[in-house]
Length: 200
Image (cartoon, rainbow, N blue to C red; front, side):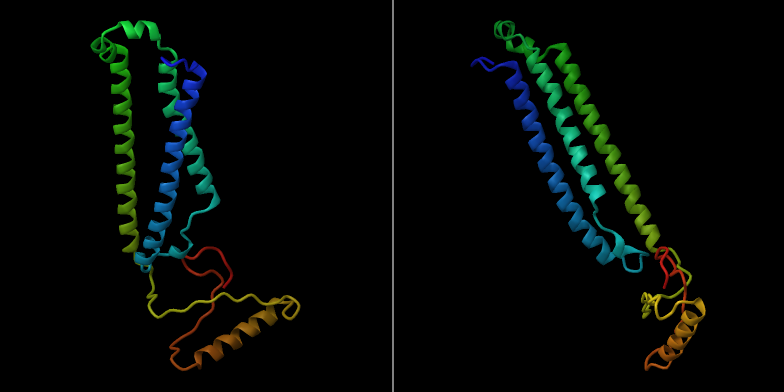
């Protein structure tokens, strides 16, 4: 402003800087989330449907929206403060009076308190999520899933138009699988436990 920059340019500079920082933070968060998801899937063990945990477009759009809103909000407040600044009056005031003004002190204090509150909220949420994950790993599924192999089979309708023909095929398949070396037992289910609603 002392060099002649307009208030619009000052506001644009603040917003651009905050948007760049928020975009960088969002990109780093998405990359960190992708890496942590891979780690989570590897250490999940017998956690049901662990392989289906992944980032999707909804998550990415949400992260992009949050980064945009955070960038606008974090840049709008200092931009509004700078645009409302009277340069002539500020240059004539003492530095102690300018820095220690009551309005700015309340603004900075409120901003710091808000950041601490949001950080505490995120930490509590992360802790509860981690506790739920640990408890979920210890849930008894009601069956032993070690050395268990599942597969999904879809029959062509042209060759098996009726449920009776499909039932005969599945019974014959189960009988043949039970005779394979190393197979202790084999069964058929319509809905695989803790795996979602699919025909198996």
